[in-house]
Image 1 (spheres, rainbow, N blue to C red):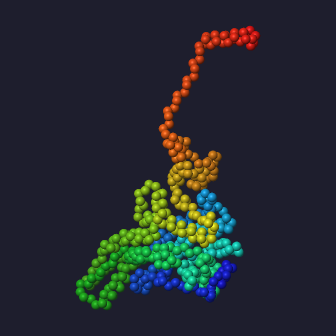
Image 2: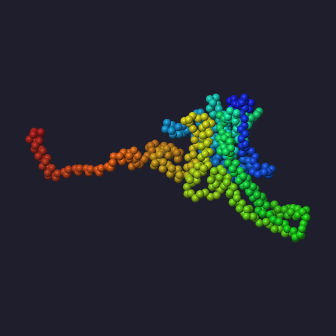
Image 3: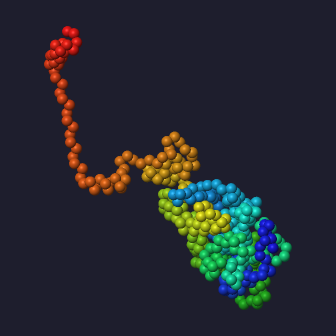
Length: 454
Protein backbone atom coordinates (compact mmCIF):
# COMPACT_ATOMS: atom_id res chain seq x y z
CA UNK A 1 0.00 0.00 0.00
CA UNK A 2 1.29 3.45 -0.95
CA UNK A 3 0.36 6.75 0.66
CA UNK A 4 1.88 10.09 -0.37
CA UNK A 5 3.97 8.10 -2.83
CA UNK A 6 5.67 6.04 -0.09
CA UNK A 7 5.39 2.30 0.35
CA UNK A 8 3.83 1.47 3.72
CA UNK A 9 2.73 -1.69 5.45
CA UNK A 10 -0.68 -3.16 4.77
CA UNK A 11 -2.69 -5.66 6.76
CA UNK A 12 -1.15 -8.37 4.56
CA UNK A 13 2.38 -7.59 5.78
CA UNK A 14 4.58 -10.66 6.43
CA UNK A 15 4.48 -10.02 10.18
CA UNK A 16 1.07 -8.47 10.84
CA UNK A 17 0.76 -6.51 14.06
CA UNK A 18 -1.71 -7.71 16.64
CA UNK A 19 -3.94 -5.56 18.77
CA UNK A 20 -3.04 -5.45 22.44
CA UNK A 21 -5.96 -6.68 24.51
CA UNK A 22 -5.55 -5.47 28.09
CA UNK A 23 -9.15 -4.72 28.88
CA UNK A 24 -9.05 -1.04 27.88
CA UNK A 25 -11.91 0.45 25.92
CA UNK A 26 -11.67 3.68 23.90
CA UNK A 27 -13.57 6.52 25.50
CA UNK A 28 -15.16 7.41 22.15
CA UNK A 29 -17.57 4.45 22.09
CA UNK A 30 -20.91 4.30 23.85
CA UNK A 31 -20.68 4.03 27.63
CA UNK A 32 -23.62 3.47 29.94
CA UNK A 33 -23.50 5.44 33.21
CA UNK A 34 -26.16 3.03 34.53
CA UNK A 35 -27.83 -0.16 33.23
CA UNK A 36 -30.32 0.64 30.48
CA UNK A 37 -28.97 4.14 29.81
CA UNK A 38 -28.45 3.37 26.11
CA UNK A 39 -32.10 2.40 25.68
CA UNK A 40 -33.12 5.68 27.37
CA UNK A 41 -30.84 7.75 25.09
CA UNK A 42 -28.62 8.72 28.04
CA UNK A 43 -25.36 7.13 26.94
CA UNK A 44 -22.08 9.02 27.37
CA UNK A 45 -20.24 9.94 24.18
CA UNK A 46 -17.98 12.89 23.31
CA UNK A 47 -20.69 14.20 20.99
CA UNK A 48 -23.44 14.21 23.61
CA UNK A 49 -21.14 15.60 26.32
CA UNK A 50 -20.24 18.60 24.14
CA UNK A 51 -23.87 19.70 24.11
CA UNK A 52 -23.50 20.76 27.76
CA UNK A 53 -22.37 24.37 28.01
CA UNK A 54 -19.58 23.83 30.56
CA UNK A 55 -17.90 21.09 28.52
CA UNK A 56 -18.08 23.13 25.33
CA UNK A 57 -16.81 26.26 27.10
CA UNK A 58 -13.77 24.48 28.57
CA UNK A 59 -12.84 22.62 25.40
CA UNK A 60 -13.30 25.56 23.04
CA UNK A 61 -11.48 28.04 25.29
CA UNK A 62 -8.42 25.82 25.79
CA UNK A 63 -8.14 25.02 22.08
CA UNK A 64 -8.64 28.64 21.03
CA UNK A 65 -6.08 29.97 23.53
CA UNK A 66 -3.40 27.57 22.31
CA UNK A 67 -4.33 28.09 18.67
CA UNK A 68 -3.84 31.85 18.87
CA UNK A 69 -0.21 31.50 20.03
CA UNK A 70 2.48 31.92 17.39
CA UNK A 71 4.55 28.81 16.68
CA UNK A 72 8.25 29.52 16.10
CA UNK A 73 11.22 27.49 14.97
CA UNK A 74 14.09 28.10 17.40
CA UNK A 75 17.79 27.21 17.37
CA UNK A 76 20.20 26.76 20.29
CA UNK A 77 23.37 28.82 19.98
CA UNK A 78 26.82 28.24 21.52
CA UNK A 79 25.68 29.80 24.80
CA UNK A 80 22.69 27.43 25.06
CA UNK A 81 20.17 30.19 24.29
CA UNK A 82 17.18 29.38 22.07
CA UNK A 83 16.52 32.09 19.47
CA UNK A 84 14.04 32.25 16.61
CA UNK A 85 15.37 31.14 13.23
CA UNK A 86 14.31 30.19 9.71
CA UNK A 87 14.94 26.89 7.97
CA UNK A 88 13.74 26.06 4.44
CA UNK A 89 13.07 22.46 5.40
CA UNK A 90 10.90 23.08 8.48
CA UNK A 91 9.62 26.67 8.50
CA UNK A 92 7.07 26.20 5.67
CA UNK A 93 5.25 23.34 7.40
CA UNK A 94 5.03 25.38 10.63
CA UNK A 95 3.30 28.19 8.74
CA UNK A 96 0.91 25.99 6.72
CA UNK A 97 0.83 22.38 7.99
CA UNK A 98 -1.31 21.20 5.06
CA UNK A 99 -3.17 22.42 2.00
CA UNK A 100 -6.38 23.40 3.82
CA UNK A 101 -5.29 24.69 7.26
CA UNK A 102 -3.18 27.43 8.76
CA UNK A 103 -1.21 26.55 11.86
CA UNK A 104 -3.71 28.21 14.22
CA UNK A 105 -6.56 25.98 12.98
CA UNK A 106 -4.26 22.97 12.92
CA UNK A 107 -3.25 23.53 16.56
CA UNK A 108 -6.89 23.95 17.61
CA UNK A 109 -7.85 20.64 15.97
CA UNK A 110 -4.87 18.89 17.60
CA UNK A 111 -5.87 20.11 21.07
CA UNK A 112 -9.59 19.43 20.51
CA UNK A 113 -8.77 15.86 19.55
CA UNK A 114 -6.83 15.39 22.80
CA UNK A 115 -9.44 16.99 25.04
CA UNK A 116 -12.47 15.26 23.55
CA UNK A 117 -11.09 11.86 22.55
CA UNK A 118 -7.95 11.62 24.70
CA UNK A 119 -5.59 11.18 21.73
CA UNK A 120 -4.26 13.29 18.87
CA UNK A 121 -3.05 11.39 15.80
CA UNK A 122 -1.17 13.41 13.16
CA UNK A 123 -0.17 11.76 9.86
CA UNK A 124 3.04 12.91 8.15
CA UNK A 125 3.56 13.57 4.46
CA UNK A 126 7.15 13.47 3.17
CA UNK A 127 8.83 14.65 0.00
CA UNK A 128 11.62 13.00 -2.00
CA UNK A 129 14.16 14.26 0.56
CA UNK A 130 12.32 12.32 3.29
CA UNK A 131 11.50 15.69 4.93
CA UNK A 132 8.04 16.19 6.46
CA UNK A 133 6.20 18.72 4.30
CA UNK A 134 2.61 18.32 5.55
CA UNK A 135 0.76 17.22 8.68
CA UNK A 136 -2.84 15.98 8.95
CA UNK A 137 -4.81 15.60 12.19
CA UNK A 138 -6.83 12.37 11.91
CA UNK A 139 -10.18 11.41 13.42
CA UNK A 140 -9.21 9.53 16.61
CA UNK A 141 -12.21 7.24 16.35
CA UNK A 142 -10.82 5.93 13.04
CA UNK A 143 -7.29 5.19 14.28
CA UNK A 144 -6.35 2.04 16.21
CA UNK A 145 -2.97 1.48 17.92
CA UNK A 146 -1.47 -1.94 17.21
CA UNK A 147 1.44 -3.85 18.72
CA UNK A 148 3.42 -6.47 16.81
CA UNK A 149 4.73 -9.64 18.46
CA UNK A 150 8.21 -8.10 18.58
CA UNK A 151 6.88 -5.01 20.42
CA UNK A 152 6.91 -2.65 17.43
CA UNK A 153 4.09 -0.12 17.36
CA UNK A 154 1.83 0.41 14.35
CA UNK A 155 -1.39 2.28 13.70
CA UNK A 156 -4.37 1.14 11.66
CA UNK A 157 -5.91 4.03 9.69
CA UNK A 158 -9.40 4.11 8.24
CA UNK A 159 -9.94 5.88 4.88
CA UNK A 160 -9.63 9.66 4.98
CA UNK A 161 -10.00 11.84 1.89
CA UNK A 162 -8.44 14.98 3.38
CA UNK A 163 -5.34 13.07 4.47
CA UNK A 164 -5.17 11.27 1.11
CA UNK A 165 -5.65 7.85 2.72
CA UNK A 166 -7.14 5.63 -0.01
CA UNK A 167 -10.85 4.92 0.44
CA UNK A 168 -10.80 1.71 -1.58
CA UNK A 169 -10.00 -1.59 0.06
CA UNK A 170 -9.23 -2.35 3.68
CA UNK A 171 -7.76 0.06 6.28
CA UNK A 172 -4.01 0.51 6.03
CA UNK A 173 -1.40 -0.03 8.72
CA UNK A 174 1.50 2.40 9.10
CA UNK A 175 4.55 2.24 11.39
CA UNK A 176 4.79 4.61 14.33
CA UNK A 177 7.45 6.73 12.62
CA UNK A 178 4.85 7.96 10.10
CA UNK A 179 2.48 9.24 12.78
CA UNK A 180 2.65 11.72 15.65
CA UNK A 181 0.73 10.36 18.63
CA UNK A 182 0.09 12.85 21.45
CA UNK A 183 -2.08 11.22 24.15
CA UNK A 184 -3.63 12.67 27.27
CA UNK A 185 -2.96 10.82 30.53
CA UNK A 186 -2.47 7.13 29.76
CA UNK A 187 -4.29 5.75 32.77
CA UNK A 188 -4.85 2.21 31.51
CA UNK A 189 -2.49 1.64 28.58
CA UNK A 190 0.63 3.47 27.34
CA UNK A 191 -0.86 3.90 23.85
CA UNK A 192 -4.35 4.97 24.90
CA UNK A 193 -4.93 8.44 26.35
CA UNK A 194 -7.98 9.10 28.49
CA UNK A 195 -10.06 12.22 27.90
CA UNK A 196 -11.15 14.43 30.83
CA UNK A 197 -14.69 13.47 29.78
CA UNK A 198 -13.97 10.10 31.38
CA UNK A 199 -14.06 11.86 34.76
CA UNK A 200 -16.78 14.45 34.16
CA UNK A 201 -19.10 12.73 31.68
CA UNK A 202 -21.66 11.87 34.35
CA UNK A 203 -21.67 15.47 35.55
CA UNK A 204 -22.30 16.60 31.98
CA UNK A 205 -25.15 14.12 31.66
CA UNK A 206 -26.64 15.32 34.95
CA UNK A 207 -26.44 18.92 33.77
CA UNK A 208 -28.10 18.01 30.48
CA UNK A 209 -30.92 16.26 32.32
CA UNK A 210 -31.46 19.28 34.56
CA UNK A 211 -31.56 21.58 31.55
CA UNK A 212 -33.96 19.24 29.79
CA UNK A 213 -36.27 19.19 32.81
CA UNK A 214 -36.07 22.98 33.02
CA UNK A 215 -37.02 23.25 29.36
CA UNK A 216 -40.02 20.99 29.89
CA UNK A 217 -40.98 22.97 32.99
CA UNK A 218 -41.06 26.30 31.17
CA UNK A 219 -42.73 24.74 28.13
CA UNK A 220 -45.57 23.95 30.55
CA UNK A 221 -45.94 27.62 31.51
CA UNK A 222 -43.53 27.31 34.45
CA UNK A 223 -46.29 25.43 36.27
CA UNK A 224 -45.08 22.50 38.38
CA UNK A 225 -48.29 20.55 37.70
CA UNK A 226 -51.15 19.65 39.92
CA UNK A 227 -53.82 17.12 40.91
CA UNK A 228 -57.50 16.87 39.94
CA UNK A 229 -59.43 15.65 42.98
CA UNK A 230 -62.93 14.14 42.77
CA UNK A 231 -65.29 14.04 45.79
CA UNK A 232 -66.15 10.41 45.08
CA UNK A 233 -64.59 7.31 43.62
CA UNK A 234 -64.16 7.29 39.88
CA UNK A 235 -63.22 4.58 37.44
CA UNK A 236 -59.85 4.49 35.66
CA UNK A 237 -61.61 5.29 32.40
CA UNK A 238 -63.15 8.40 33.94
CA UNK A 239 -59.77 9.48 35.37
CA UNK A 240 -58.17 9.20 31.92
CA UNK A 241 -61.03 11.16 30.39
CA UNK A 242 -60.79 13.97 32.99
CA UNK A 243 -56.99 14.16 32.55
CA UNK A 244 -57.18 14.30 28.76
CA UNK A 245 -59.82 17.03 28.78
CA UNK A 246 -57.90 19.09 31.38
CA UNK A 247 -54.68 18.97 29.35
CA UNK A 248 -56.64 19.81 26.19
CA UNK A 249 -58.33 22.86 27.70
CA UNK A 250 -55.60 24.40 29.85
CA UNK A 251 -52.37 22.57 28.93
CA UNK A 252 -49.51 23.59 26.64
CA UNK A 253 -50.41 26.65 24.56
CA UNK A 254 -53.71 27.05 26.46
CA UNK A 255 -51.95 27.92 29.70
CA UNK A 256 -53.78 30.72 31.54
CA UNK A 257 -57.25 30.01 30.14
CA UNK A 258 -60.21 29.71 32.45
CA UNK A 259 -61.37 26.20 33.28
CA UNK A 260 -64.85 25.28 34.53
CA UNK A 261 -65.03 22.19 36.71
CA UNK A 262 -68.21 20.22 37.45
CA UNK A 263 -69.10 17.08 39.37
CA UNK A 264 -67.24 18.43 42.39
CA UNK A 265 -63.80 18.26 40.77
CA UNK A 266 -61.09 20.38 42.40
CA UNK A 267 -57.64 21.29 41.04
CA UNK A 268 -54.75 21.61 43.49
CA UNK A 269 -51.37 22.75 42.09
CA UNK A 270 -48.24 21.04 43.35
CA UNK A 271 -45.71 23.27 45.07
CA UNK A 272 -42.06 23.33 43.92
CA UNK A 273 -39.84 21.07 45.99
CA UNK A 274 -36.65 22.22 47.66
CA UNK A 275 -34.63 20.20 45.13
CA UNK A 276 -36.31 22.03 42.22
CA UNK A 277 -35.73 25.38 43.92
CA UNK A 278 -31.96 24.61 44.11
CA UNK A 279 -31.69 23.88 40.40
CA UNK A 280 -29.30 26.79 39.77
CA UNK A 281 -26.97 25.60 42.52
CA UNK A 282 -26.97 22.08 41.10
CA UNK A 283 -26.18 23.36 37.61
CA UNK A 284 -23.34 25.42 39.07
CA UNK A 285 -22.00 22.35 40.88
CA UNK A 286 -22.02 20.23 37.72
CA UNK A 287 -20.24 23.02 35.80
CA UNK A 288 -17.59 23.38 38.53
CA UNK A 289 -16.99 19.61 38.47
CA UNK A 290 -16.40 19.72 34.72
CA UNK A 291 -14.03 22.69 35.07
CA UNK A 292 -12.10 20.74 37.70
CA UNK A 293 -11.66 17.77 35.34
CA UNK A 294 -10.31 20.06 32.60
CA UNK A 295 -8.17 22.04 35.12
CA UNK A 296 -9.90 25.26 34.08
CA UNK A 297 -10.56 27.86 36.81
CA UNK A 298 -14.39 28.17 36.87
CA UNK A 299 -14.34 31.95 36.56
CA UNK A 300 -12.59 31.59 33.17
CA UNK A 301 -15.82 30.15 31.72
CA UNK A 302 -18.03 32.54 33.73
CA UNK A 303 -19.02 30.03 36.40
CA UNK A 304 -18.89 32.03 39.62
CA UNK A 305 -17.09 35.31 40.34
CA UNK A 306 -13.34 35.70 39.81
CA UNK A 307 -10.95 36.05 42.77
CA UNK A 308 -10.68 39.60 44.11
CA UNK A 309 -7.44 40.50 42.34
CA UNK A 310 -6.90 44.01 41.03
CA UNK A 311 -4.54 42.72 38.32
CA UNK A 312 -5.51 40.13 35.72
CA UNK A 313 -1.96 38.75 35.46
CA UNK A 314 -2.18 36.34 38.47
CA UNK A 315 -5.44 34.91 37.09
CA UNK A 316 -3.95 34.23 33.65
CA UNK A 317 -0.75 32.84 35.21
CA UNK A 318 -2.81 30.41 37.30
CA UNK A 319 -4.76 29.33 34.21
CA UNK A 320 -1.52 28.77 32.30
CA UNK A 321 0.18 26.81 35.10
CA UNK A 322 -2.75 24.53 35.89
CA UNK A 323 -4.27 23.97 32.46
CA UNK A 324 -2.26 25.06 29.43
CA UNK A 325 1.38 24.41 30.30
CA UNK A 326 1.31 20.61 30.10
CA UNK A 327 -0.67 20.67 26.84
CA UNK A 328 1.72 23.20 25.28
CA UNK A 329 4.85 21.36 26.43
CA UNK A 330 3.66 17.99 25.09
CA UNK A 331 2.61 19.63 21.83
CA UNK A 332 6.10 21.12 21.34
CA UNK A 333 7.92 17.89 22.23
CA UNK A 334 5.69 15.77 20.02
CA UNK A 335 6.15 18.17 17.10
CA UNK A 336 9.95 18.19 17.57
CA UNK A 337 10.04 14.42 17.40
CA UNK A 338 7.53 14.20 14.56
CA UNK A 339 9.45 16.65 12.35
CA UNK A 340 12.67 14.79 13.23
CA UNK A 341 14.49 18.01 14.09
CA UNK A 342 18.18 18.14 14.91
CA UNK A 343 19.18 18.49 18.56
CA UNK A 344 19.96 22.18 18.05
CA UNK A 345 16.51 22.92 16.57
CA UNK A 346 13.11 22.96 18.25
CA UNK A 347 9.60 24.36 18.14
CA UNK A 348 8.25 26.84 20.66
CA UNK A 349 4.96 28.61 21.29
CA UNK A 350 5.17 32.37 21.95
CA UNK A 351 3.45 32.27 25.33
CA UNK A 352 4.23 35.93 26.08
CA UNK A 353 1.17 36.86 24.04
CA UNK A 354 -0.95 34.91 26.52
CA UNK A 355 0.65 35.99 29.79
CA UNK A 356 1.11 39.71 29.03
CA UNK A 357 -2.32 40.91 28.03
CA UNK A 358 -2.68 44.42 29.45
CA UNK A 359 -0.54 47.49 28.85
CA UNK A 360 0.27 48.03 32.53
CA UNK A 361 1.73 44.55 32.88
CA UNK A 362 3.78 44.86 29.68
CA UNK A 363 5.16 48.24 30.72
CA UNK A 364 6.12 47.06 34.21
CA UNK A 365 7.79 43.92 32.87
CA UNK A 366 9.79 45.95 30.34
CA UNK A 367 10.84 48.50 32.99
CA UNK A 368 11.92 45.86 35.50
CA UNK A 369 13.90 43.88 32.92
CA UNK A 370 15.79 46.99 31.77
CA UNK A 371 16.51 48.23 35.31
CA UNK A 372 17.76 44.79 36.34
CA UNK A 373 20.11 44.67 33.37
CA UNK A 374 18.46 41.51 32.04
CA UNK A 375 17.43 43.03 28.72
CA UNK A 376 18.67 45.87 26.58
CA UNK A 377 16.09 48.55 25.75
CA UNK A 378 15.88 47.27 22.17
CA UNK A 379 15.25 43.73 23.39
CA UNK A 380 12.53 44.87 25.79
CA UNK A 381 10.89 46.97 23.07
CA UNK A 382 10.80 44.00 20.71
CA UNK A 383 9.69 41.45 23.33
CA UNK A 384 6.91 43.40 25.04
CA UNK A 385 5.74 45.90 22.43
CA UNK A 386 6.87 44.59 19.05
CA UNK A 387 8.81 47.78 18.32
CA UNK A 388 12.08 48.25 16.46
CA UNK A 389 15.49 49.35 17.76
CA UNK A 390 16.44 52.90 18.69
CA UNK A 391 19.80 54.71 18.86
CA UNK A 392 21.79 53.63 21.90
CA UNK A 393 19.37 50.86 22.86
CA UNK A 394 21.46 47.83 21.97
CA UNK A 395 23.35 47.52 25.28
CA UNK A 396 21.97 46.53 28.71
CA UNK A 397 22.27 49.15 31.46
CA UNK A 398 23.09 49.00 35.17
CA UNK A 399 23.44 51.76 37.75
CA UNK A 400 26.97 53.09 38.42
CA UNK A 401 26.94 52.38 42.16
CA UNK A 402 26.48 48.65 41.63
CA UNK A 403 29.55 46.40 42.15
CA UNK A 404 30.23 42.82 41.18
CA UNK A 405 30.55 40.20 43.90
CA UNK A 406 34.19 39.62 42.89
CA UNK A 407 35.02 43.31 43.42
CA UNK A 408 33.35 43.29 46.82
CA UNK A 409 35.24 40.13 47.82
CA UNK A 410 38.59 41.73 46.89
CA UNK A 411 37.76 44.82 48.88
CA UNK A 412 36.86 42.77 51.95
CA UNK A 413 40.08 40.73 51.68
CA UNK A 414 42.22 43.92 51.62
CA UNK A 415 40.95 44.96 55.02
CA UNK A 416 39.58 48.35 56.08
CA UNK A 417 40.47 51.24 53.82
CA UNK A 418 42.73 53.88 55.56
CA UNK A 419 41.32 57.38 55.81
CA UNK A 420 42.35 59.63 52.91
CA UNK A 421 45.28 62.09 53.41
CA UNK A 422 44.14 65.69 53.04
CA UNK A 423 45.83 67.45 50.09
CA UNK A 424 48.64 70.08 50.71
CA UNK A 425 47.21 73.57 50.35
CA UNK A 426 48.84 75.76 47.62
CA UNK A 427 51.38 78.47 48.79
CA UNK A 428 50.03 81.89 49.53
CA UNK A 429 51.13 84.44 46.84
CA UNK A 430 53.29 87.43 48.12
CA UNK A 431 51.84 90.92 48.30
CA UNK A 432 51.96 93.13 45.19
CA UNK A 433 54.75 95.51 46.41
CA UNK A 434 56.88 92.61 47.51
CA UNK A 435 56.37 90.95 44.14
CA UNK A 436 57.50 94.14 42.33
CA UNK A 437 60.70 94.36 44.45
CA UNK A 438 61.50 90.75 43.66
CA UNK A 439 61.05 91.31 39.94
CA UNK A 440 63.36 94.43 40.08
CA UNK A 441 66.07 92.45 41.87
CA UNK A 442 65.85 89.69 39.26
CA UNK A 443 66.18 92.30 36.52
CA UNK A 444 69.26 93.90 38.05
CA UNK A 445 70.91 90.50 38.52
CA UNK A 446 70.26 89.58 34.89
CA UNK A 447 71.85 92.88 33.68
CA UNK A 448 74.96 92.28 35.78
CA UNK A 449 75.31 88.81 34.36
CA UNK A 450 75.08 90.26 30.89
CA UNK A 451 72.04 88.19 30.00
CA UNK A 452 70.51 91.17 28.26
CA UNK A 453 71.15 94.91 27.94
CA UNK A 454 70.18 97.30 30.69
